[in-house]
Length: 259
Ligand code: DGL
Image (cartoon, rainbow, N blue to C red; front, side, top):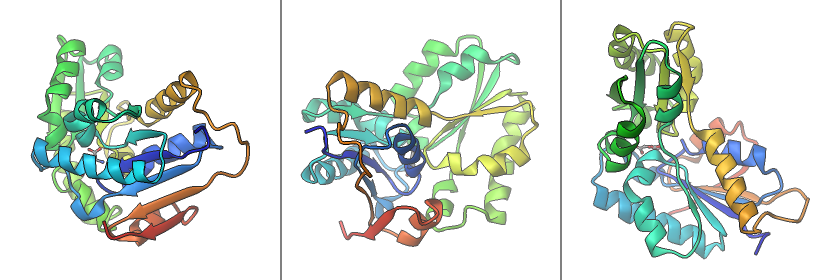
């Protein structure tokens, strides 16, 4: 069992930001990554549709023999992970916006969060936000249009810069000192965001925390791969594989798959 792969899925290419963290922390683990780019973005879909797509992705990964599923998508986690945990007998690791560290560390008592509509409107997000962000101004911003630009290979475009400027404006007005990235596509924006934000504003995402949690759960269940050899890593996309290759700098084996 321990040499079975870790399964990771996202609505598209964004979850590769999590895949990279998982691979860096667990370099001997075999991994299968699934980018459901054909159905991206998930962010504007109903909870029911997000749940159904998450089930389809999980079935795909379990059919490939995965021992654990990393839901590398805030939108799928906040809308579907409790259903997935109830429905399957494998461990699931999810990702949620890192509102807690931002709320605990802010000096200006104002933090920004950029995420999809599906995440910001979810019960799970509100529960976490209510729990940790007491007395703190949380400027929530839906990142409408960002995921489609990344999925179509326009990450470093003028359109993206213009969009981000608009989204950051209310946050800067509120004097935020933390920006929480609540979507796994967004870590790829960090170089652009760094140019647009004052240097006092810290950007946080949950990628490393997810990788650490994956390691903890695998270790607790004695599922860490004991074979210390070059792992077998495969990434599948039902969209544009070139976009995947660009983000991964061509370092991993990728294939198009019609699913
Ligand atoms: N990567 C997904 C997330 O973390 C993307 C959202 C989308 O497809 O809209 O929420």
